[in-house]
Length: 146
Image (cartoon, rainbow, N blue to C red; front, side, top):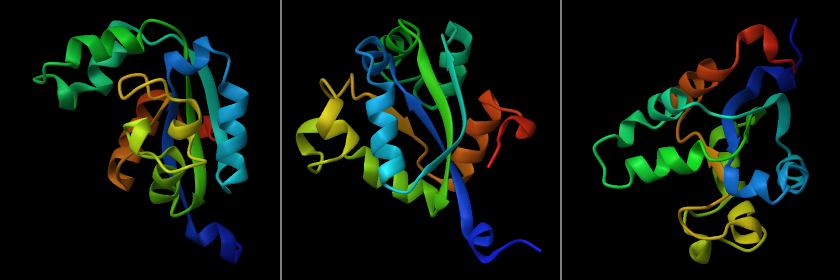
């Protein structure tokens, strides 16, 4: 029998982006994530290939910034992670802050660490459905250890 806490847990996907890994901010960002009550249940530092970045950001393929986005995301290593918490997707989106760090709330990851709207240090899933797809792109279920 699962305990009550496990019944309400959900997962989201996180990327600590190249601008943050280049500045050695992985630990500082993860400290904010964990202090907010999100648990890191899978983590890997990788260098995205062009194909991985194009697939991951495929929803933006027709937009003018797509090439720049792919180039930025493949420029340095990233840290891909699975986070777990009650209502993980909205919780992590709140912890990340607004995409534009100028509009982000005090204490959020982007307010604390982002350089600008393009180099905003982190990505997080925008829905439970996308979280499941994004997690599956980088992790097998047996690699996720709660």
